[in-house]
Image (cartoon, rainbow, N blue to C red; front, side):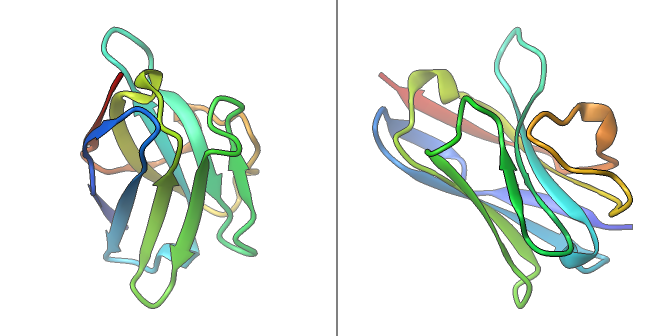
Length: 127
């Protein structure tokens, strides 16, 4: 099984940028679809985006499309989430997650589509 650890969270002003990293261990990250979810206080965990295991095709929620970019570094066994033009409503705990390749990826994935989860990293955007 793969273990996932997020890093890179912190406090940033609105309009700024932040880069989160998800480090995988135990297995090769390219063996899985890898996604990012976030959960704001009092809200449900929501899909942010994902990257396909096979061709690195990416999918994003409408709320972050054009601002967030997911990339994979096979040499480092990491998946990064580059977040630009951050807004106060992007404030949340961000989770890295992975699932088996037989799942079909799309722009609207659910929690149940993913199997392995990191512990999360806090992102706070001040307005």
